Length: 168
Image (cartoon, rainbow, N blue to C red; front, side):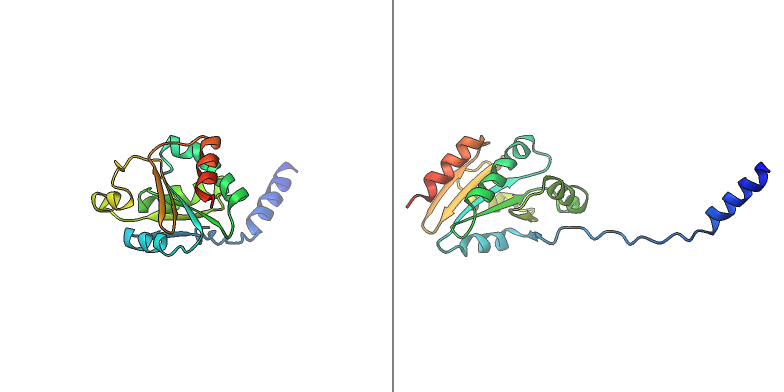
């Protein structure tokens, strides 16, 4: 009797058709991969809005610690007058394995860009002549006005700097 029940169960399991699952599409539609020239063009296109640009990477602990503050600024101050851009300096070959899952897991809403330009000695001084290349680094821009920070932010210090910068 046990053999009959076992055989019936085995037959039932083997006869069930497995549906092939399509692999999920990566959710990186909003992560654009750009070289520095393209990033520079994007940064120079701003009109009256303030750009808050943060250079970070998934492997940088201080960067990851301050990202929620940039998310908060985006959520509370972002809009027509302020745009937050998060520029990942992760290696481009880590896009699918690290950057996309990180952005998805953290639920990052600001625009995320992956900078794919191996000529950092050329573009780092173009971002700011005082930048050593260390991250996190942040740039505040508005037509004719700019402020650069090569440091980590606390929530209060980031909100303070942004609020002071956007004052008329």
